[in-house]
Length: 123
Image 1 (cartoon, rainbow, N blue to C red):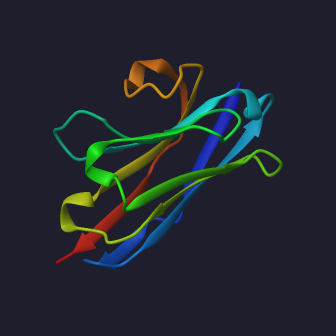
Image 2: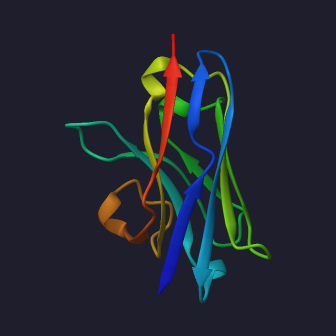
């Protein structure tokens, strides 16, 4: 069992930056692929980025390439999402997730989810 808690969301102007953090508790955090997803009202949960258990391999969606960076610290049981050059369309609730798949972009590949943190980007 893994419990996930996200933090770091907030309101930022377009072009600004935010750093989201996900703190994990429970056993075997370092064995899970960790992912970030986002969701807006009425839409499906959307893949943002993922990182392998070792931190060596990262995966991201096309719309965040060059702007968002995922990283993890297995000693601290945390995974972060650094978001730069934010756009109003990045506004969403961002979720952290843990799973066994290799960087899967599908929500069903992840077993554990946090409650989410709101990110709002004003124009």
